[in-house]
Amino acid sequence: MKKIIESVKRYSFFYLLGIASTYAVFYSIYSLNETLYNNLKDYDKVISYFADVSILLFTAGIFSVSLKYFQFLGIFEKEFKKVISSKDFDEKLEKQLKQITFSEDFLIEQSNLPELWETVTLCKYKQQFPNLYPKLKKKIYNDLFITDNISYYYKNIQLNYYIELIKESYVKITESASLTIVRPDINEFEWDFGVTYLKSEDENIDYDLFFDIKNVKGIEFDKNDIEEEEINDLKIKKFISKRLHGQLEYHVERRIELTQDLRYDREFSFGSDRIIDDINLRIKHCDKLCVFFTPVNKNIMYPNGAYPREKNAYINRDIFLSGEKFKIFIYKK
Image (tube, rainbow, N blue to C red):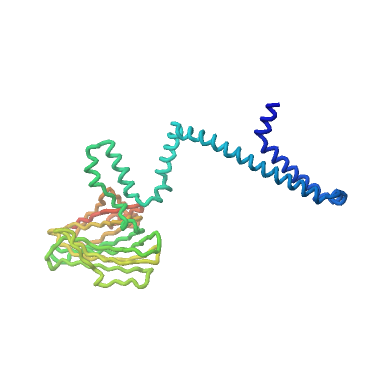
C-alpha cells in the first residue's frame, strides 16, 4: 500500500492530466453524437459539472508538472556543473573554439585582420628565435593589409614601351597602358598613378602624364592635375590622383613620358602598390639602342607567343602582388 501511495504522489500529474483528457473525450462524444445529445436529460448541467471538475483537475495537473519541472532543473543544474568542470569538456571546448577562431567565416568578420596577421607571424618567429621577437615586432609590415592598397586591383594590364635616343645620351621613354580597375563596390575611392625619378637640374629632363577613363563621363585630364612630391634627397614623384565612384570596373588608358640621361640613369622599372591580375607588355626601341628586360621580386614573365621572340614581348596571366614587377635596362649601341 505504501508503494502504491508513493507511486500516486510521484505520478499524480499524469493521473490529473488523464482525468482532464477524459473530459475532452467525453465532451467530444456528446457533441458529435446527436442521438445521445437529444435523449440525455439535464445535458447542460452534466457538461457544466464535468467542465468544472476537469478544469480543477487540469489546473492541479499543470501545477504538479511545474513542480516536477523545477525539481528536474535542480538535478540538471548539478549534472551540468559536473560536465562543464570536467577535463574532457575543457578539451572539447578548446578544440571547437580553435576551429571557430581560425575559420575563414569568422576571420572575415573581424576588423583587426592586420593585428591578427602580425600576432600569428610573430608567434612563429618567437617559437624559433625568441631573442628576435622585440626587434621583429617593430619591423613587421605587410603591404597587402594597407587599406588604400586593397581598395581596388588592376586586371588585364597591357603595356607598350617605345624607347628612342633623342640627343647624345638622352633617351625618351613612352609607356602607353590599357587597364581595368576592379572595385568591390560603387562607393567613392581614390585612384592614382605616377612616376618616380632622380632629382636633376638638367633642363633636358622632362616628365609628362596623361589618362583617359573610357566608361565614365565627366572625369577629364588637366595638366593642373599633376602633383609633385619630394620623396627624399634623391627622388621626386609626379602623380595624378582622382576621386572615382559609380562603377565596379573602370576602363583606363594612360600614358607616361619621361626623359633620362643614360650617363646617370639607364634603368626603367615598373611597379604597383596594388595587386595585378594578368599583365602583358611589349618593348620597342630605336636602332641606336639595345635593351635588357628582367622580372624582379620572384615575378615571372614568359615570352608572348603572339609575337616572334626577338620582339621583346612578355606575358603572365597570374596574380602579381604589390611591389616592383620588372626592370628595363637601356644601352647605346
